[in-house]
Length: 129
Image (tube, rainbow, N blue to C red; front, side, top):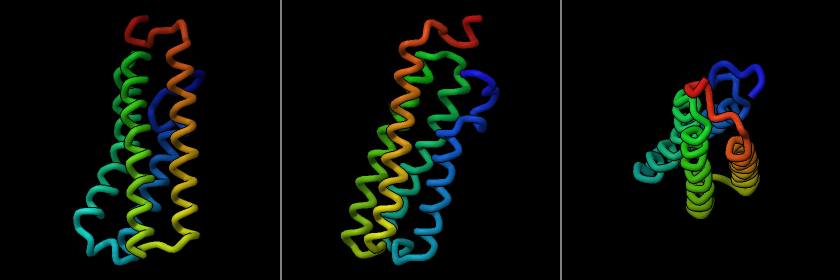
């Protein structure tokens, strides 16, 4: 993975963090803050994306990292689904919905690309060096 030394160096982790920041603003600035269950679900799922990227990276093995990326990708889909609920309950407008959904979709594609790379790589990970 080149000169990536820490999970914080990964573009997908940085984008997952940005998504979390945007969702926190959404929670803080809309009526979503009063919808406890949905608020906690979307907050937890968004956190799961960046946390699983970090945990998988720290495992130092490509196979484990790919597994954690798969979980992160699933959480990305969960956030996207929850965004539909936010939109349907009129917590966000069409533009906010599209922006956040596109952010999730883009992140999901990037996570998938890294998973494919890890699975096709001959390198097993730094713990095997």
